[in-house]
Amino acid sequence: MSSSRIALRALPRHLARSPHMEWAKLHSAAKFNLATSGLASLPLAELGVSLDQLEITGADIYGYDPLLKAIAGRYRVPQTSVVSAVGASMANYMALAATTEPGDEILVEHPWYEPMVSSARYLGLRVAGFERHAAKDFAIDPGDLARQLTPRTRVIVLTNLHNPSGALTPDSTLREIAAMANESGALVMVDEVYREMLYESQPQTAFHLDPERFIITNSLTKGYGLTGLRCGWVLAPPAIAERMWHIYDVHGATFGHTAELLSVIAFEKLPQISAKAKAMLDTNRALLKEVLAAHTGLLEYFWPEYGTVVFPRLRKGSADDFCDFLRKDFETSVVPGRFFDAPDHFRIGMGLSTGEVRDAVQQLGKGLEAWKKSR
Image (cartoon, rainbow, N blue to C red; front, side, top):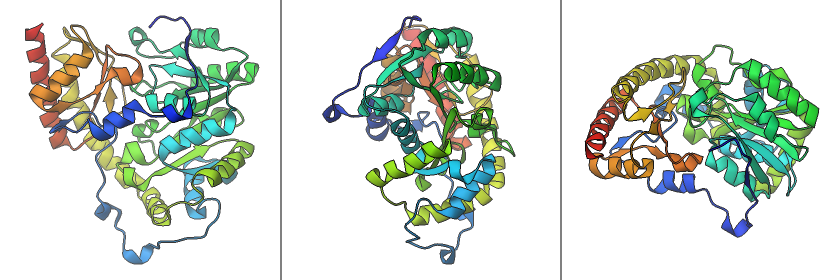
């Protein structure tokens, strides 16, 4: 898309839906799966949990204190800035709900993560976009962002690592964005769920760059294979954090206590989980990189330094048709780029077990060869 202003208006509530999530739940399954952006599910046995460590029901208060302490300690933030949430998706929703009113405008990176945009439109927000150009390795251009920023902008929204490309936004750029936001009176919301895949012993977060300007969302889902725990959180200025707790009263009231207990145990074991995940992902990335490098005539792509996703552009033919072709003829699933408003691209995920990824990328290579011959 050009650098002209992208704008989507709010939708009536009865039309609320997420096409990406519908596709992921109903149509993404395939024998060879390259559509999953998170890591393979961690078996419960690897947490070393015994039944006497679990309970069904806990205290009915605002968050489970040991879990909030674990999150605050890991990211070195005050506990008053931590809000637990049911996964990163609910964290994103809560962050937007607590910082906007119907009719407000938010400024979202493009290509964008469709469920984020759908949540915003459900909340009655106007969505404008700033470009992350593939030709510039999906880096944020602060100049383009500044041109799209208006007095109506309430929140600047981005993902880091970028979903769908995997590009890492450096702190220097985030500081520039914070300065722009400060001048215009906007907040900056950063979904850092994929940043966990740097597997740092002391994970960094943009929250420390400006604790009054940044709102951070995250979870244990993508980087550690702990999807079923639905352990997400928000880091926010205390006043906004308190507002989120009250919004949560309207939507969910309480959390699943067994999942909270398991999440605390998972935080204690993250160093071991991270080491195993990183080793597997390093191997998987090498497998996919080799296949993509053999098809540069058909694909144009940026190779991210970290993470589980790559977002190639198909040089010949329709990317939607190619995704259908892969499913039908090679039983292989990738995510069509239309779900990121980039219809000439598709997203490849490489987070499943190495055996699964090895077989799937071999199928992808066969599919690319067959597609090239058919053009």
